[in-house]
Image (cartoon, rainbow, N blue to C red):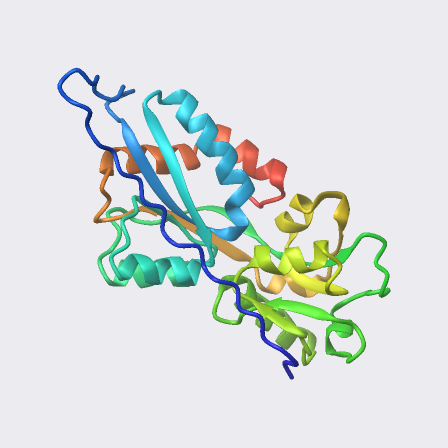
Length: 258
């Protein structure tokens, strides 16, 4: 039973306008034949790693700027279908990428670049004494989960079914970062987030592993988009996400590598 519902607005698409200043204005620098802005729509759980990769990509390609929109994969996929201008989509689940493939919105076969699994997140010190998934079926602790239509919520539904637990969340959030924020602020006693988010939460958050997490491992696919305003930069960014340098960043953050 859900005792209350909290909705977090999905971030809108970032629009970047480039205007000329006359014939004296120099053209943007290009590197390896690419330049301008590359707009990346990425799952919220990729916020830290993709932000770091964006800095490295810009350093390797002077004159290129990476702009992100981080949100739930389901929301981002819907925005792309509705015509939002984006160059690359990185999803936290194959289902949302398949939605775009089926509608002809990607220009190359999506590639799985990382995998992720759930972990119980509790505030520092675990004041409620949470020990496992069974606590999510009790009335006493305050619990936060992702909305079921987003990848972290769908994965949570699977692990609860495997564990035979009927969860009693106090709030369902629009993406995994919103859930993590509830834990960091001490507004809930426990939540289900990805293990990479527990690590990103730093000293404010503790993680508790549970065996059922192995039954709901999420593959993360990435692909350039068919209507990309900057197709060349999109292809280069996808290639970079799959590079050895990027894999090292993902491994450090706690992702599994395919």
